Length: 245
Image (cartoon, rainbow, N blue to C red; front, side, top):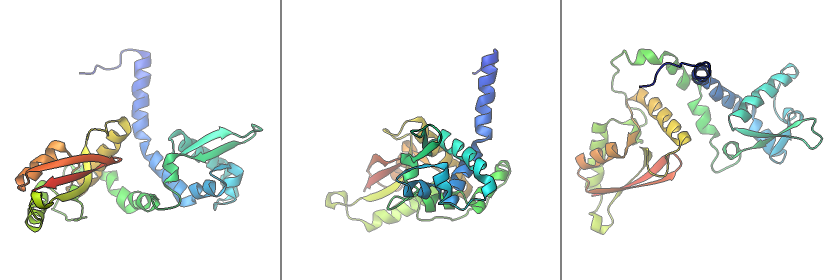
């Protein structure tokens, strides 16, 4: 059991940890602002490297907010959305696209529509009263029926039983392919993956969903009458699950 901080440095570290969590929502809102202002596109249009003066020529920004944009970019570089370095003359900072912000421009892997949906006020607002959710007995909503992580175990078993009836035996190539999250899957165990998986789990909890680990999936497959399965973690925080009759 962890003890209360017993030194000045430990106290400061503990405060820093809580500040990091308290202001965590600002990271999401800063990212949303960047997408809304089309900052990734502005940097991309300048050859993937642009100064603040070049960025403002491509975005809609009130002149009085120029210095505020600099502060927004400081957050976005600190959180890894953009990179930053000094120009050759040292007078201006040059902002670049990182692997993350490259996914906010162009196609086919552009995640901008997903971010716009997940950070929309309608989606985010319920989390303001998150504590009340734990105090209520919620109805059984049926949202996103196409995704098993949005369904409870019983519904998943029912869906998979119907799938099993519709496919041939394993020796004739029969299998069900599921693209979903397997929490803690081998090959995905790093801090960023663990954090994103935990956040997804909290998000789908609002629709009585759950992000499952391998044992959770195994239990569902067995109850649905399947004999074997294979997990391949090849989709970032997601995996391909092959389930055999």
